[in-house]
Image: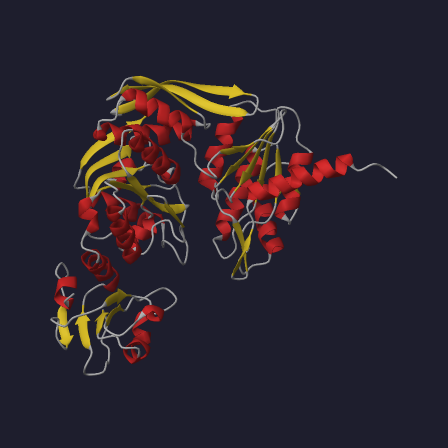
Length: 494
């Protein structure tokens, strides 16, 4: 491929060399440079790709894409752009032959609800014969291939690589989570989304390595609606109009509001032993009854979103009803059977907004007690810890404070921060640093009618400690605990 072909949708200047040279690879990772590569110098928060120019040219890179003044060997072509992250996105699309243009791309942004909604949309569309790729927080799915996720929205090169693989696997559509950071860092730049979705907005992802403030967070969410044909929005969210202030797309809405185009009416909770669900009537642009096997008002929003999307794919009503009834998402209000007397579930709720929404929802099912087991991640905002502690102290009947991903912090120091928040309330709590033992305590002390929620880990199957990810899947821990408890109860006394 000629370098000029790679740059055809980018504004650039040739500082040195020629843009008519042949190139072999495109990368922003110095470790992946081979002879003939184009190396894109990304100015990151921790590492600056421009610093690797001597290394990559020594390895045989024949072209550099830069946003700063640099010195390079005379035989190396240097291309100057305003923003190398933006250039990487457009160059990646060209490198893989613009695969997004061969797919109907659905992008979902919002503080919560993205993951569940992507799986619901995928489930419904596949019921009517669409082959749907998925990119999200848990994994990327390309046909029968499943790739564990590192980021909610991968780097632009990876996105287009996945799109190309999806096209080759016969996919006609893709549904993907689009994070605010992904938008801020131009990972989805140049993609024209068929449909963009806004679920909701809460104060999260604000800190030194994320968004500088809430206004920046809100602004970045709105970027999606400058690059899609149709925007579908939660009309009930207080920030909806601000997020869509500069939108250039057609707009439709969903929610409980009478002003919403698609509305949920006659909502009722469904509660059986070991089972929590919700039912409602979809009105407005659609007209049918819905029941889903996952609890809570927020899952009404998630399912409304999926319905609003699939309406534009002309999916029959009975297919939507069936697909929503059986749609499940790992680690999102995921019920795990441990007893006939109480309910235990896992959820990824890892900030105050999502935890409060979850606990308020579960209290509506009138449990005897609501027990919340959670911790907070290390090397993240302390404010999140205080807020989550206060939320659980206020809403749960018992909080079991434990460890999450401590990263490079001491687990006990994180627990102490959570206690600052919880002690603002009258909430009862215990602290058990070892997460497995915290779960054991919750199960062992479960009472008839309890709802026990293990919050924060959800789909994650690891615990990150000092840069190392150790295997830790709560489903496995629960199975081990049940087996150990059964073994202990069968051991005769001496």
